[in-house]
Image 1 (cartoon, rainbow, N blue to C red):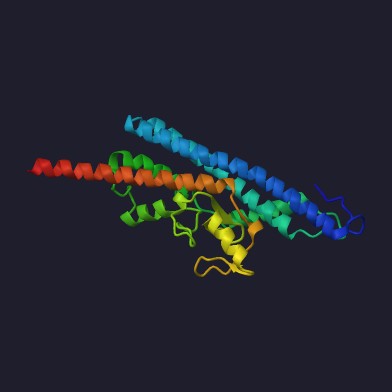
Image 2 (image 1 turned 180 degrees about the vertical axis):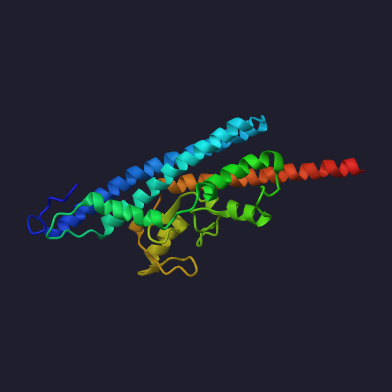
Length: 258
């Protein structure tokens, strides 16, 4: 696909750039919806796998794990494609010659994909899936080949960068209206951050060490944020259940010793 717009005619370069930015935003929004649905599917498959493991249906759990690995490849490609579209939309400037958008997007896609080449087994989503299954019968024990620290690292991996709102002090999972900065990706309580921005001509992100400045139109409640927060709540419940199971097991062992 090549650009047929003439930057010298009509609205010129600014108009063409504006159309590109709008089109890229629409495509990113569509991809984001697909990403959200896949994240929901991952959570559903994890819950089904846990139920199957409780029933000792190991073969079915393995089949489900393979399905997760296959879907992860699509999920990753979708995120790279979204980043590529966003990058082109933000930086594209029409030139004197026609633009090969297919090649332009593919080059950006490969750039993002090339920077992240981890195996599916090491992806946080896969690790969380395997840990949830493992904890059914081995709560509190590290998985084979991993140390206790690996479990802690996996449980803490998230695309949410801060776990509490820097202004309200509330945990992210307890925010009434969570919003996220488009540029720095930090999360805040909407009422608190909007008040903060309105009181400061140059509102620097209140997260310590963050150099970004905030604008009200660039602090948004994106649908993926709500999904990620729900995942955090789910993981907290899983960890609490695992701790309770471990406590009960220790109590039973103590009674047998007595």
